[in-house]
Image 1 (cartoon, rainbow, N blue to C red):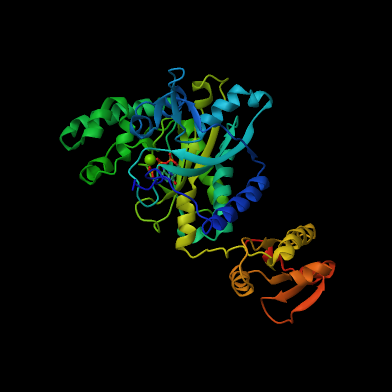
Image 2 (image 1 turned 90 degrees about the vertical axis):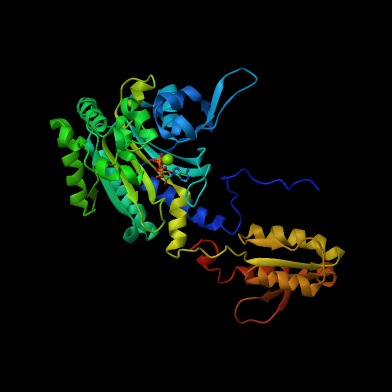
Length: 430
Ligand code: ATP
Ligand code: MG
């Protein structure tokens, strides 16, 4: 026998039992985004490789070793499955001149692809949800994003297990000054540097600060701080962001080593972190990237945004015990016999016309086994049709939850019987 076909390693199927949690989360997201005036953007999953190289930076984990890149054999072009959403979103905004009449608040959601070692909370196809505010300079949008995320944790009941880490990367000049000091410092500690760090010493020394290598921790901890190089404008921006958080009563921790894995950030960078998910504890990350629009060929426009890892967030929801009940139908339609089966299809449509959710028993089988399925479906009513009922356009309605006798009635009356007392719980997930 040949080997059974399996999904690609690190890429997950979403099974019906897990879908209600995703749907609950997505429905909640849509309402929350509307409350802040963000509008959806959908971009292709495949882009030209050059986009990500230019946006994310050549010397980053993502571009150096995580991208699914291949040559399109039909035209010889290098293509890449998107590893994140910001580059595509900005590319599309430029391509369609979305910013011609001012700033835009945008959001996107969907699968992203990174060739990483699969483990809990780290997959090769994972899902991100993110927002981008393009064309807004002030610190007010940075603050809006932090207020938004804090509200989302409240809505999800996660406020107690997620905390905010914050840093400022300043402007290009402060980063250049800091970079010189960093290189000199790392050179003086060359013996401690690992291979990755040595390679990045001149190309991207800031990223060495992000290293998780335990043997480098003490040395990295004592490295020159970008915070000490910030100029007046960067400090004022950072102070305003902190003030906004204080005004809203949102607690935060300044983390001078928070530099983020992508090159396009400046000024504010932040991460929302939980200690309930082990090593993969960052559920949401973002910041300001004022240079990116111009870098990708657009008219210069400031911007900021964030992305969250949906698997990690839902993993956290499961960890704290949020589990939506499986959605149950209102009616399970039992039908035994040839004429009954024909009438049941019609009856199902009539019941659905009245707004009821109906599962039709398919594939035949005896009365007893069908009733078992009806019960297991969680439906509130079994609507039972035999050839006898079918011949006179009637059905028997049997309540499956709680009290009530089985009644044989005309189909129109069954609509009333099953519709009576429909609880909102049968249409809402929670
Ligand atoms: P990490 O340091 O965990 O690798 P990152 O800095 O690469 O994260 P970002 O590029 O900022 O992550 O992506 C934003 C969010 O997307 C992360 O905070 C995380 O929640 C999620 N994420 C990133 N990579 C993966 C992955 N391979 N699998 C699942 N979620 C991921
Ligand atoms: Mg990563």
